[in-house]
Image (cartoon, rainbow, N blue to C red; front, side, top):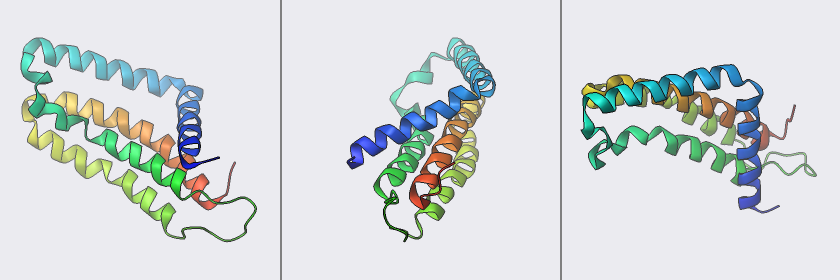
Length: 141
């Protein structure tokens, strides 16, 4: 399986985790949608181009899965392909929290949407980190 196939497979595994434990996913998604609608009704400029930076936590999630796909451990070999890859993945996950604070400071009028969206994406990234670390270490549950 190539890198793209591995990426799609890992993404599917991460979403399987999200839907296996669906209650927090539904709650976070509902809160994010409600906060978005509330903020959008108050201020229509929420969807302006300058506010697209609020979507930046998605880049971290994509990067986590990408590292998991590119640095995947070959099951036939006993050595790690990229020894520090799991720490990079975990560091990217932890990067969500300073970015959340920065987004709440930068987008003060939309801080509740930034908070809700960032927490939702952090929950998605938790599952992406879970499968990516298993991929780069070769230790599958």
